[in-house]
Every structure is written in structure tokens, then in C-alpha cells.
Length: 121
Image (tube, rainbow, N blue to C red; front, top):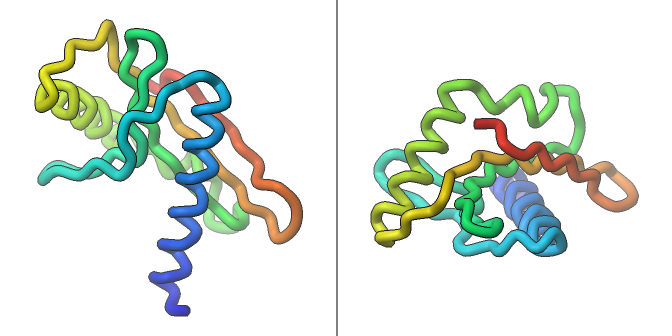
């Protein structure tokens, strides 16, 4: 397996873990890996009348930094714009749009560790 394939597999694993986590909280996953010419949303979800744009960051170690450190202010701005576009393209008018981070740490042994940070912006 190449390095790119391994990264893709780790990312897909993290997104599956994140989707299950959101579902367990009663947050409905509407779409995964939505793409347009401006970027990608890992998970689009709904909690009540609020549209939730979830950025999923998966790590196997913290040597390269925490997943939280990878979410910059510019990325948050882009995710909010992408959420607005997603809703506009579907003619949906949510009560609000929230950007969450679901950080997944996959240790060598044992279950994944999940940190769900709500409302980054």
C-alpha cells in the first residue's frame, strides 16, 4: 500500500467513526464527502433545525500535531461558505449553520478516541 493509499484509508476510517458518533448523538448525517469547485465538506449533518458542517481530522499519532491544529481560521471560513452553498443549492434555509470538528485518534491498539468540538464558528 502506498503512502497516499494509507492516508486515504485512515481518512475513510475516521469519517466512518465520526458518522457513527454523530448518529449516536442524534445528529442526522445528510451527506458525506460533498465536493464543489470551492472545496469539500467531510460530513454535512442536521441537528434540529441547524445545518452542521463537520470537518473530520484523523490521526494515528500526535507527532505531526493534533487534529485541532490543522483547522485554521481560513479553513473555518471556507467551511462556513461551503455550508451556505450546500444549503443554497438544495434550496434549504436552516435556522443556522454550525461548523464542528470531529477529531479521531486511532491508536495502535484499542478503540478510537473521539473529540467532538461543536461550534468552531
